[in-house]
Amino acid sequence: MGKTMDDVQHAVEKFLSALRQRNASTNTITAYRKDLTKFQSYVTEKYAGQLRAMDHVAIRGFLSHLYESGLSKPSVARTLAAVRSLYRWLGREKYVQHNPAALVATPRLPKKLPRVPTIEEMNAIFEPNTNVEEKAAFPTRDRLIFELLYGCGVRNSELVGIDLGDIHFSNEVILVRGKGRKERLVPFGAAAKDALTIYLKDRQQILSAKKKSTPALLINLRAGRLTTRSVGRIVKSLAVAGGLSPDIHPHTLRHAFGTHMLEEGADLRAIQELLGHERLSTTQRYTQLSVKHMMQVYDQTHPRSK
Image (cartoon, rainbow, N blue to C red; front, top):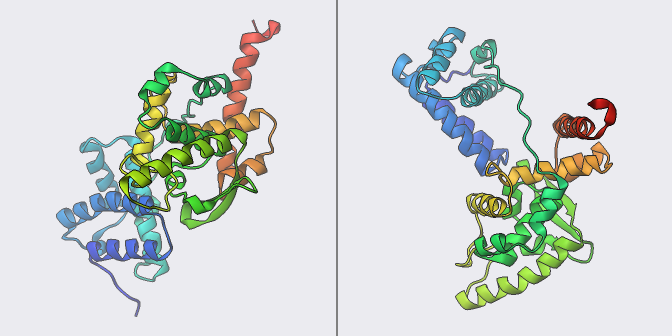
Protein backbone atom coordinates (compact mmCIF):
# COMPACT_ATOMS: atom_id res chain seq x y z
CA MET A 1 0.00 0.00 0.00
CA GLY A 2 1.41 3.41 -0.97
CA LYS A 3 1.94 6.38 1.32
CA THR A 4 -0.86 8.91 1.70
CA MET A 5 -0.86 12.65 2.33
CA ASP A 6 -4.37 14.06 2.30
CA ASP A 7 -3.84 17.24 4.31
CA VAL A 8 -2.98 20.14 2.00
CA GLN A 9 -1.17 22.17 4.69
CA HIS A 10 1.08 19.23 5.54
CA ALA A 11 1.78 18.62 1.84
CA VAL A 12 2.74 22.25 1.19
CA GLU A 13 5.07 22.40 4.22
CA LYS A 14 6.77 19.12 3.24
CA PHE A 15 7.24 20.39 -0.32
CA LEU A 16 8.77 23.69 0.84
CA SER A 17 11.05 21.78 3.20
CA ALA A 18 12.20 19.62 0.26
CA LEU A 19 12.98 22.79 -1.72
CA ARG A 20 15.16 24.07 1.15
CA GLN A 21 17.02 20.76 1.24
CA ARG A 22 17.71 21.13 -2.50
CA ASN A 23 19.31 24.56 -1.83
CA ALA A 24 16.57 26.50 -3.60
CA SER A 25 17.04 30.24 -3.14
CA THR A 26 15.13 32.18 -0.50
CA ASN A 27 13.35 34.10 -3.28
CA THR A 28 12.22 30.84 -4.93
CA ILE A 29 10.88 29.41 -1.67
CA THR A 30 9.10 32.68 -0.83
CA ALA A 31 7.45 32.74 -4.28
CA TYR A 32 6.28 29.10 -3.96
CA ARG A 33 4.97 29.74 -0.45
CA LYS A 34 3.00 32.80 -1.62
CA ASP A 35 1.37 30.93 -4.51
CA LEU A 36 0.73 27.69 -2.64
CA THR A 37 -0.82 29.55 0.31
CA LYS A 38 -3.59 30.61 -2.11
CA PHE A 39 -4.07 26.96 -3.13
CA GLN A 40 -4.00 25.79 0.49
CA SER A 41 -6.65 28.35 1.52
CA TYR A 42 -8.92 27.35 -1.38
CA VAL A 43 -8.65 23.60 -0.71
CA THR A 44 -9.21 24.18 3.02
CA GLU A 45 -12.30 26.30 2.42
CA LYS A 46 -13.90 24.28 -0.40
CA TYR A 47 -12.71 20.73 0.28
CA ALA A 48 -11.93 20.68 4.02
CA GLY A 49 -8.20 20.64 3.22
CA GLN A 50 -8.41 17.20 1.55
CA LEU A 51 -6.09 16.80 -1.46
CA ARG A 52 -7.79 13.56 -2.47
CA ALA A 53 -10.90 15.61 -3.34
CA MET A 54 -8.96 17.63 -5.95
CA ASP A 55 -9.28 16.62 -9.60
CA HIS A 56 -8.70 18.67 -12.76
CA VAL A 57 -12.22 20.14 -12.55
CA ALA A 58 -11.50 21.33 -8.99
CA ILE A 59 -8.19 22.84 -10.14
CA ARG A 60 -10.05 24.76 -12.87
CA GLY A 61 -12.41 25.99 -10.16
CA PHE A 62 -9.38 27.21 -8.22
CA LEU A 63 -8.14 29.16 -11.26
CA SER A 64 -11.61 30.71 -11.71
CA HIS A 65 -11.48 31.74 -8.07
CA LEU A 66 -8.10 33.45 -8.68
CA TYR A 67 -9.48 35.38 -11.66
CA GLU A 68 -12.51 36.46 -9.60
CA SER A 69 -10.10 37.66 -6.90
CA GLY A 70 -8.58 40.03 -9.44
CA LEU A 71 -5.35 38.17 -10.28
CA SER A 72 -3.83 38.80 -13.70
CA LYS A 73 -3.19 36.06 -16.26
CA PRO A 74 0.58 35.95 -15.53
CA SER A 75 -0.11 35.62 -11.79
CA VAL A 76 -2.65 32.82 -12.36
CA ALA A 77 -0.21 31.04 -14.71
CA ARG A 78 2.55 31.26 -12.08
CA THR A 79 0.25 29.92 -9.35
CA LEU A 80 -0.81 27.00 -11.58
CA ALA A 81 2.89 26.25 -12.22
CA ALA A 82 3.48 26.15 -8.44
CA VAL A 83 0.56 23.73 -7.95
CA ARG A 84 1.90 21.51 -10.74
CA SER A 85 5.32 21.48 -9.06
CA LEU A 86 3.71 20.52 -5.75
CA TYR A 87 1.91 17.58 -7.39
CA ARG A 88 5.05 16.50 -9.27
CA TRP A 89 6.91 16.31 -5.98
CA LEU A 90 4.03 14.42 -4.35
CA GLY A 91 4.13 11.99 -7.29
CA ARG A 92 7.89 11.43 -6.98
CA GLU A 93 7.45 10.75 -3.27
CA LYS A 94 4.62 8.28 -4.06
CA TYR A 95 2.03 10.29 -2.14
CA VAL A 96 -0.22 10.68 -5.20
CA GLN A 97 -0.62 8.70 -8.42
CA HIS A 98 -1.88 11.50 -10.67
CA ASN A 99 -1.20 15.19 -11.22
CA PRO A 100 -4.63 16.81 -11.79
CA ALA A 101 -2.98 20.19 -12.44
CA ALA A 102 -1.19 18.71 -15.49
CA LEU A 103 -4.60 18.31 -17.20
CA VAL A 104 -5.38 22.02 -16.85
CA ALA A 105 -4.25 24.32 -19.67
CA THR A 106 -1.95 27.21 -18.78
CA PRO A 107 -3.54 30.64 -19.41
CA ARG A 108 -2.34 31.96 -22.77
CA LEU A 109 0.01 34.88 -22.26
CA PRO A 110 1.04 37.46 -24.87
CA LYS A 111 4.69 37.06 -25.93
CA LYS A 112 6.16 40.27 -24.64
CA LEU A 113 9.84 40.96 -25.18
CA PRO A 114 11.47 43.30 -22.66
CA ARG A 115 12.33 46.78 -23.88
CA VAL A 116 16.12 46.95 -23.72
CA PRO A 117 18.00 50.28 -23.62
CA THR A 118 20.28 50.88 -26.61
CA ILE A 119 24.06 50.84 -26.32
CA GLU A 120 24.02 54.64 -26.69
CA GLU A 121 21.46 55.01 -23.86
CA MET A 122 23.54 52.81 -21.57
CA ASN A 123 26.74 54.71 -22.38
CA ALA A 124 24.96 57.97 -21.49
CA ILE A 125 24.21 56.66 -17.98
CA PHE A 126 27.92 56.23 -17.30
CA GLU A 127 28.88 59.70 -18.51
CA PRO A 128 29.05 62.57 -15.99
CA ASN A 129 25.46 63.67 -15.39
CA THR A 130 24.36 66.22 -12.79
CA ASN A 131 20.84 64.77 -12.54
CA VAL A 132 22.16 61.27 -11.84
CA GLU A 133 24.77 62.49 -9.34
CA GLU A 134 22.17 64.49 -7.39
CA LYS A 135 19.89 61.43 -7.15
CA ALA A 136 22.64 59.10 -5.92
CA ALA A 137 22.68 58.65 -2.14
CA PHE A 138 26.04 56.87 -2.32
CA PRO A 139 27.49 57.83 -5.76
CA THR A 140 30.51 55.51 -5.92
CA ARG A 141 28.46 52.49 -4.81
CA ASP A 142 25.58 53.29 -7.14
CA ARG A 143 27.94 53.61 -10.10
CA LEU A 144 29.41 50.22 -9.21
CA ILE A 145 25.91 48.69 -9.11
CA PHE A 146 25.35 49.78 -12.73
CA GLU A 147 28.83 48.59 -13.76
CA LEU A 148 28.24 45.11 -12.34
CA LEU A 149 24.63 44.66 -13.50
CA TYR A 150 25.32 45.86 -17.04
CA GLY A 151 29.05 45.11 -17.29
CA CYS A 152 28.85 41.57 -15.87
CA GLY A 153 25.21 40.61 -16.50
CA VAL A 154 24.63 39.36 -12.95
CA ARG A 155 21.20 38.92 -11.43
CA ASN A 156 20.06 41.27 -8.67
CA SER A 157 20.13 38.44 -6.11
CA GLU A 158 23.64 37.49 -7.24
CA LEU A 159 24.80 41.09 -6.99
CA VAL A 160 23.79 41.60 -3.36
CA GLY A 161 25.27 38.19 -2.48
CA ILE A 162 28.78 39.12 -3.64
CA ASP A 163 31.32 39.24 -0.80
CA LEU A 164 34.58 41.14 -0.86
CA GLY A 165 36.46 37.83 -0.95
CA ASP A 166 34.64 36.84 -4.16
CA ILE A 167 36.47 39.52 -6.16
CA HIS A 168 39.76 38.37 -7.70
CA PHE A 169 41.49 41.53 -8.86
CA SER A 170 44.52 39.73 -10.30
CA ASN A 171 42.40 37.64 -12.69
CA GLU A 172 39.68 40.31 -13.07
CA VAL A 173 36.87 37.86 -12.26
CA ILE A 174 34.11 37.69 -9.65
CA LEU A 175 32.82 34.48 -8.09
CA VAL A 176 29.03 34.61 -8.38
CA ARG A 177 26.50 32.30 -6.72
CA GLY A 178 23.50 31.82 -8.99
CA LYS A 179 20.26 29.86 -8.85
CA GLY A 180 20.49 26.70 -6.78
CA ARG A 181 23.74 28.15 -5.35
CA LYS A 182 25.59 27.21 -8.50
CA GLU A 183 28.87 29.07 -8.74
CA ARG A 184 30.39 30.67 -11.82
CA LEU A 185 33.17 33.12 -12.57
CA VAL A 186 32.27 36.30 -14.44
CA PRO A 187 34.92 38.65 -15.84
CA PHE A 188 34.88 42.38 -15.23
CA GLY A 189 36.46 45.08 -17.37
CA ALA A 190 38.54 48.17 -16.77
CA ALA A 191 35.51 50.40 -16.05
CA ALA A 192 34.20 48.05 -13.35
CA LYS A 193 37.71 47.72 -11.89
CA ASP A 194 38.02 51.50 -11.61
CA ALA A 195 34.55 51.74 -10.05
CA LEU A 196 35.46 48.99 -7.55
CA THR A 197 38.73 50.65 -6.56
CA ILE A 198 37.06 54.02 -5.91
CA TYR A 199 34.06 52.52 -4.08
CA LEU A 200 36.12 50.32 -1.76
CA LYS A 201 37.75 53.40 -0.20
CA ASP A 202 34.32 54.89 0.58
CA ARG A 203 33.10 51.52 1.84
CA GLN A 204 35.99 51.32 4.31
CA GLN A 205 35.30 54.84 5.56
CA ILE A 206 31.68 53.93 6.35
CA LEU A 207 32.66 50.70 8.11
CA SER A 208 35.27 52.56 10.19
CA ALA A 209 32.82 55.33 11.09
CA LYS A 210 30.17 52.78 12.15
CA LYS A 211 32.79 50.56 13.84
CA LYS A 212 31.42 47.57 11.94
CA SER A 213 32.73 44.83 9.67
CA THR A 214 30.93 42.79 7.01
CA PRO A 215 31.98 40.45 4.20
CA ALA A 216 29.36 42.09 1.92
CA LEU A 217 30.71 43.99 -1.07
CA LEU A 218 27.73 46.34 -1.40
CA ILE A 219 26.65 48.08 1.79
CA ASN A 220 24.20 50.79 2.73
CA LEU A 221 25.05 53.95 4.69
CA ARG A 222 24.39 52.04 7.95
CA ALA A 223 27.09 49.51 7.00
CA GLY A 224 24.60 46.69 6.38
CA ARG A 225 24.41 44.47 3.31
CA LEU A 226 22.38 46.02 0.51
CA THR A 227 19.07 44.26 -0.30
CA THR A 228 17.61 43.40 -3.72
CA ARG A 229 14.75 45.82 -3.03
CA SER A 230 17.20 48.66 -2.39
CA VAL A 231 19.07 47.86 -5.60
CA GLY A 232 15.77 47.98 -7.51
CA ARG A 233 14.99 51.43 -6.12
CA ILE A 234 18.50 52.73 -6.86
CA VAL A 235 18.48 51.45 -10.45
CA LYS A 236 15.04 52.89 -11.22
CA SER A 237 15.81 56.26 -9.65
CA LEU A 238 19.15 56.76 -11.38
CA ALA A 239 17.94 55.39 -14.72
CA VAL A 240 15.05 57.85 -14.80
CA ALA A 241 17.41 60.68 -13.80
CA GLY A 242 19.62 59.63 -16.72
CA GLY A 243 16.74 59.79 -19.19
CA LEU A 244 15.82 56.09 -19.39
CA SER A 245 12.32 54.58 -19.16
CA PRO A 246 10.71 54.42 -15.70
CA ASP A 247 10.03 50.72 -16.46
CA ILE A 248 13.72 49.90 -15.99
CA HIS A 249 14.77 47.50 -13.24
CA PRO A 250 17.95 45.50 -12.44
CA HIS A 251 16.98 42.64 -14.77
CA THR A 252 16.67 45.13 -17.64
CA LEU A 253 20.41 45.77 -17.33
CA ARG A 254 21.06 42.01 -17.44
CA HIS A 255 18.93 41.82 -20.61
CA ALA A 256 20.91 44.74 -22.05
CA PHE A 257 24.19 42.92 -21.27
CA GLY A 258 23.11 39.81 -23.22
CA THR A 259 21.48 41.71 -26.09
CA HIS A 260 24.37 44.13 -26.65
CA MET A 261 26.97 41.36 -26.56
CA LEU A 262 25.00 39.46 -29.20
CA GLU A 263 24.68 42.61 -31.33
CA GLU A 264 28.45 43.08 -31.13
CA GLY A 265 29.08 39.53 -32.37
CA ALA A 266 29.45 37.43 -29.19
CA ASP A 267 28.81 33.69 -29.41
CA LEU A 268 25.49 32.55 -27.94
CA ARG A 269 27.16 29.77 -25.93
CA ALA A 270 29.58 32.27 -24.37
CA ILE A 271 26.68 34.52 -23.39
CA GLN A 272 24.94 31.48 -21.89
CA GLU A 273 27.99 30.80 -19.69
CA LEU A 274 28.35 34.43 -18.63
CA LEU A 275 24.68 34.75 -17.71
CA GLY A 276 24.60 31.39 -15.93
CA HIS A 277 21.68 30.05 -17.97
CA GLU A 278 21.18 26.31 -17.54
CA ARG A 279 19.50 25.97 -20.95
CA LEU A 280 20.53 27.57 -24.23
CA SER A 281 16.84 28.14 -25.04
CA THR A 282 16.75 30.76 -22.28
CA THR A 283 19.68 32.61 -23.86
CA GLN A 284 18.08 32.39 -27.31
CA ARG A 285 15.52 34.98 -26.21
CA TYR A 286 18.27 37.51 -26.90
CA THR A 287 18.34 36.53 -30.57
CA GLN A 288 14.66 37.60 -30.74
CA LEU A 289 15.56 40.95 -29.20
CA SER A 290 18.47 41.43 -31.59
CA VAL A 291 16.46 40.49 -34.68
CA LYS A 292 13.85 43.02 -33.62
CA HIS A 293 16.58 45.67 -33.26
CA MET A 294 18.06 44.68 -36.62
CA MET A 295 14.69 45.11 -38.34
CA GLN A 296 14.24 48.53 -36.76
CA VAL A 297 17.67 49.62 -37.98
CA TYR A 298 16.89 48.30 -41.47
CA ASP A 299 13.51 50.05 -41.60
CA GLN A 300 15.02 53.32 -40.44
CA THR A 301 18.14 53.38 -42.58
CA HIS A 302 17.95 51.24 -45.71
CA PRO A 303 16.77 53.17 -48.81
CA ARG A 304 14.88 50.13 -50.14
CA SER A 305 12.88 49.75 -46.94
CA LYS A 306 10.95 52.99 -47.50
